[in-house]
Image (tube, rainbow, N blue to C red; front, side, top):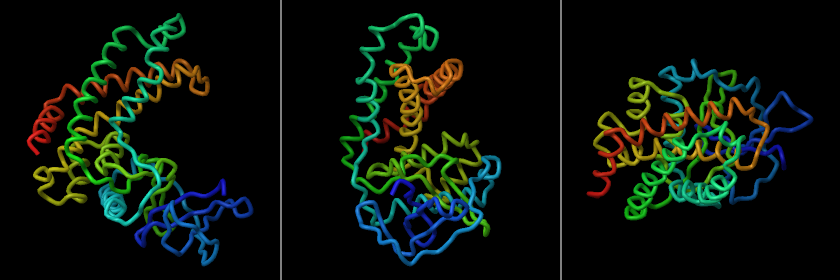
Amino acid sequence: CPYEKIILTSEGLQIINFRKHAPKKTLVAQDLVFFNQVMQDHQIAYLHQMHSIDISILLRQNYLVAIANLLKKLHGSDANFITQTNVFLRNKKLYANFANALADIYDEYLQEQITREQFADIEFFLQCNDKSLKIHEQLALKPQPCHMDPSHKNFLIDSQDKVYLSDWEFASMGDPMFDLANFATSSYLDADQEQHFLQTYFGANYKRNPAYYRYLVQKPTVVLWKLLWYLEQVYLDNKYIADAELKYRIAIRIQEANTFYLSEAFNYALEQLKKN
């Protein structure tokens, strides 16, 4: 069904169907279902007045608690998504797909989007990504169910102020710390908000949790993935993003990636993970 989506609620993973004949209502299957199971269209209920949350509201403490708990519930669930994602390897492959082509076609249009200096920065980011990949492979982590795109835009609330996680297009088995890092970076959590979010997920002493170091390593990985996606749009000459907007987004992501990759926190996290 082209209108099929999956939403995580406090009751578990449930499938959501958006139907043409009821555009203002959302059908929710009562049964617990995953991507690798067959959904029978029965036992349905309606959720009324569901809508996305404005980011300024989303970052209030009560919503941060709900979001952290939803992600924790997903990561600890028995969901078994069909695909498996190593984000470090994905970044490496994504760049390899178009890096040589970009260098070969460094024409006037491309020079307007990205400078030679920015290309050098990106090569440095990929070197950091390779270091992260090597450590990740040495850790040999068991993949867990992940959403892979938990930006603030994908969290919804209903008329009862209940929080839902939607848009499961990229859901796969992977490292849950990518989900946490993705939400934190895309929502631009400040220090207090990030602390509250992580304390809800890990507990009060979250900085003593070995997974916290993986979270720190995943933060620049998220930014690099978004940067490479924008570069892919240049390579594909995709015009649905205006040139000026694309140039701005690339510059911002490069600045963010530099901040993360050059930070003491990132390099300290790598050293701690090497010890494990």
